[in-house]
Amino acid sequence: MKRGPDPSSASGEPRSHALAPEEFIRIKVKAELRKRMRGVRKTTPIEACAERSAKIVMALLALPELAKVPLVKLVSINLRYS
Image 1 (cartoon, rainbow, N blue to C red):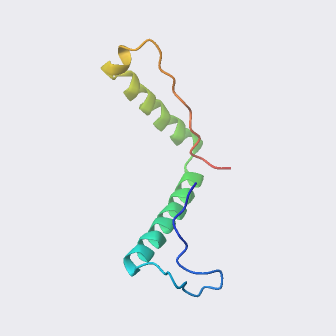
Image 2: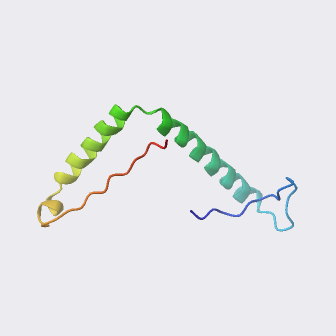
Image 3: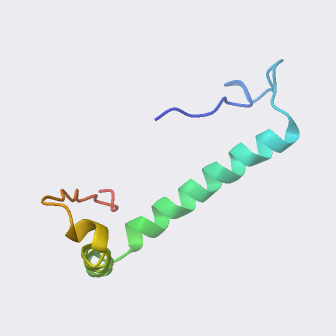
């Protein structure tokens, strides 16, 4: 996964090409949101994940567009990281 530029050097000092304050804040906020969402995913019970997954599949199968095609390949995505 490609990440945005690091706004500071390894020593914690700003680099000479430091980001604008808005860009720096945006990167920090995104990193914090990702961290929080990883925590939520790790604590979500497997049963709740399976229930949500089943609802997604049922919603997809109800789409008339999918009823017209001969084959639909659904990919399982594990949202819980071990």
